[in-house]
Image (cartoon, one colour):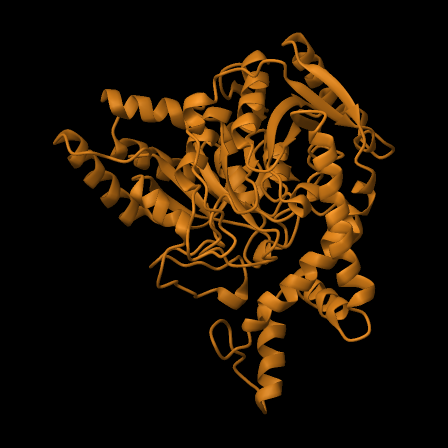
Length: 498
């Protein structure tokens, strides 16, 4: 019989099977760090608790592809020793964190949930991993994803399916489903994911946690295994907005190894997140409330707007007229870039090589055929087609022009409002297997999130309600480029009020 428990302050009741019931309420990363600073707990105790929870719970959820127990405990002990001796420690000292398995971790396997990279151990750390290590965060493991981040349900992983902690029959969303599930199931209080078309925000919405996609260029992509280079961005998952702000503060900043990394100061997000915004203008686009939107999702979104009204915000109606082209534009651009980025996996440089082949061409074909899953192959073929002679202008070039129009729509909208509010997805989490044989329906599950990636703007998902089936519903807020401070403060206003 299902049992419930309170997942955090001012939150809804989380319904789970008894075997998954948490022994204690969720504690945010900010609260845990406070306990560490006050000596109420230790890094070793938190790391052991995280690893124990993973061991007891993850066999049913499937959030993690690998754990880093020995190294994590050794690092935690070293942090405790430094803290006891009065030596300086980092902003996240002793905090367990999970990492999506498409970010390079030196000495720890990075598989991208693909047989192609099943045994790949990077010789270097991604920039964000370097930042986390400098901040003394404790990496407890690598999380599951759709293969090479291509998917919306974490069912495309070559190794396992990740299940939603709120209902094991439902998807966690994708592609960063493992990272969202790790936080939702209290295995870690924070995690990192990557977002190419909604891969942080949609899983966060489905799992009832906070997920933030920063502005393109705000966080270095160095060491992130590329899917679509002009769209990919790394961001945090957390139990609350304040913890997401702190994690973004740690990973953001310029990195000369990423040519798209923007050289501008990183605001003190964690210091300002609790400051409400005066005269806040919340935009709503008519294109976001049309046929196909689940009535419960629409009702939760409109109730969230009522919360903002009660806080003194002005609700501004606006239009994003080119958003109807976002899905087609995204899948042409993303697939084209993926076909180029994944060309390196040929069985020669690195990655899987077929055991049997008759010549070099056969070796390339067999290695890629065995190493890549069906969805990755589908997107490579679509990308190759749209980039091929005679079709480039008709597809890829036209998609780039429409992308510019989508960005223009947002620029015009943000002249009238501070943030734009919308659903995260047209429905709550769907059942596992429901869309695997319908790629178009699966692609449409990202219809509300894709535009932010095409425009390069930041977006955040925050919980705003529950469906009648007890599944989380997420609210999306979007802001202008590099306005994460405003975005986080607006999200925190709702979180505190609700």
